[in-house]
Amino acid sequence: MNSRRYWKNRLPFLLTNLVCMAALTVFLLVCGNSVSAVVLILIVWALILLTGLVLTYWKRKRQMKKLLDMAEQLSERYLISEVMELPEQAEDQVYYQLLKMAGKSMLEQIGEVERERLEYKEYIEQWIHEIKTPITAMKLLCENHRTDWTKELLLELEKTNRFTEQALYYARSEHTEKDYSVREMALSQVVHQAIADNKYLLLQGGMRLEVEEMQDTVYSDEKWVRFILNQLIANAVKYRTEQPVLRISTHKRQDQVVLVMEDNGIGIAASDLPRIFEKGFTGQNGRMVQQSTGIGLYLCKRLCEKLGIGIAAESSEQGTAISLAFHINCLIHEVQG
Image 1 (cartoon, rainbow, N blue to C red):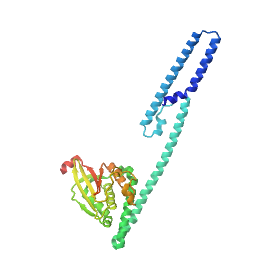
Image 2: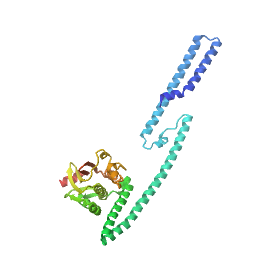
Image 3: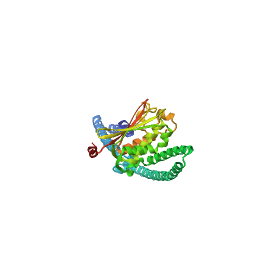
Image 4: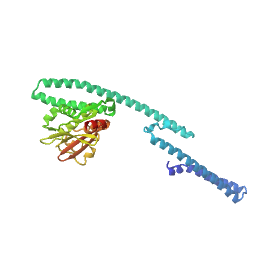
């Protein structure tokens, strides 16, 4: 509570008391009372007034501090009226009722927004599942009728499928725990599946692959990890240079298995590197490549956080390396060791 403003608001009350004290002084002197008696009465009046004002200020300040502390502890501060006590003063009760009305209105608005958001999310998920059917059918038709034209079409279908997957995972990224299927998986199998998902993109980009032999197994969700790898492969192709190379390898670091995807692309500017996992951030490279949306790495970061996978990036003029660190269960680590 602002002390200066509090006392400033009390000025009319103080001035009224001063006027009353002056009037009383004149009346008592006219009635023949001694000056000492009048002064004593004024001193007692002033002490009582000062004591009352100080006690009232202290009580109000303590009440306001308690309210602020309660509000600080609430994650939804618009619910403050639900936890605060009913005020004693009549004017405070009016503000209390206003807070109640505002809180109720806010809850109704939030409920409506959440319902609309859920309906929209369900529609998007349903639409994506529906659109996958014609995409798969077109892929099969192109695979069965190989021509130069169908190869180009397969590449575009591959991109379309990746964008629809991105939209689906974005819609589900807030509640990935409802779609978990954590089990033991071989990293080599997931890597090769991701490469197969992007084979036409890799061929079109002329990307040379160097995949080291991997014997490591980890516990995670294969579908989510595959999605992350698809995004990283697409980025490596998007920001490639002439004679592009993508190296995929693993190594162990303490209680972790680290999967590294390293390319020899255009690299990431040092000033952009700390922000590449931010939503919508495209940086200098994004301004050169029109297809950049700033969503892919943001989703990768969010999914890694949900799955307990560490993700980090290193970059220079010679290319970029993205590492995914999978924690090893202590019992599995002993068996594999």
